[in-house]
Image 1 (cartoon, rainbow over the protein chains, first blue to last red):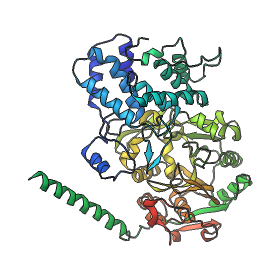
Image 2: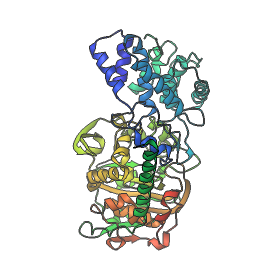
Image 3: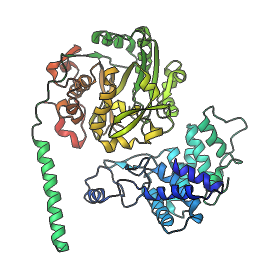
Image 4: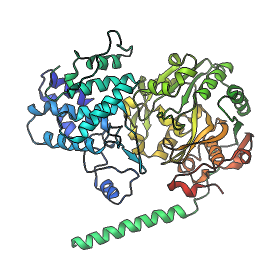
Length: 216
Length: 325
């Protein structure tokens, strides 16, 4: 929620003490698995999932582990606010967060909630989390991003999920990819959250809200 | 202390700790407490296929357990986790449809369905894949996505001063855990008690509901059942269960049963015995032994005997020593 507030403040040109306090809070929060015990456990293969726990990322709630969705939203927020925020910490956390997202990519090339494997079995990616991860990786030049975009395009063509499709439209457009424009009247959903995302993902929508340097 | 000495001592401590844990696992666990006063009824009803008359089988089991639902607001809580056409992750749609019919027939004032999946955001899309929309009459009008429902807080739960639950859950008079009979790579088995993870709202705790993992999976299962178990009934879909690397990547395992009862600890213990798992080795059941009955002599088995329906589910590597003798 704080990440969304910072993103909105940024696109509306708000740069005051409360925004800086929110950014300070985001910079303080780290995934709880980024500690000595988990890193030692991971090194000794005592953890049931093969995870790179060397990066910090962001959890859903303080004191919990890092996941893709909160990390992606925070990356969007911090990248947007970076030019207004003095100090090297933003840049450092952004680079580390991007590495975390890249390290959590599933073997199929997309992303799920943040665990690419469990008990040495690979887990599949999902449309909505693939889209969110790509939003967090906006501006990153890495083969993982290109492969992720291919998976996103495939998901967009195949998924029945309105939520997944809406996030994919936003992410693909932010990355400058062509996405078929929905036919007139093909949306909007009755669900307010979903309708908002569908409108954001429209070619004339405010999808740039999520882009690095983009203005709504 | 030199770096070499520190490394050696750390290594020794880790090996010692690991050995201690292993030795503890091999020890025979202490005897379980007696549990609540009186015995618990659990019905094991045979249902070989989803095309059987599930409603009449369910009715038979509910009557054998003596459940009265007249005038109650009933919330059916299926297990909808993810969808994979190659396996059987979720409570079958026919079981849910039968439950809707049966609870109406038994005089419930209202029958709703609610679920809050832990991995995926688009609950209705998954419900579509699992054929809930196609096979459950008026599904969308009676379904609530518990991840996005309005919430209210309760005091002192899972280490939090205020913990939020969906109003649909808090307002129900009876919650029916319509669980799937599956093995689980963290808990050993996932049955009617673990199914309560789905009442924790993702809008507050995220996807996955990582707060529960940090509190401890067995601890969270017990806490949720301490909170809701008194107004709960369980119907476990074991027509086709899942064995091996459950709860998502296992393989289908026909067990041909529906297992029901008001004591969810007793229902899960019975399911474990049907699956060839020793319930006294399942940590969440041991921890819940004051809430309900684990020991077979305290469970009044109705319907089929366990011996007649027992079919050993393949256990994942960490739970091989859970096999029932």
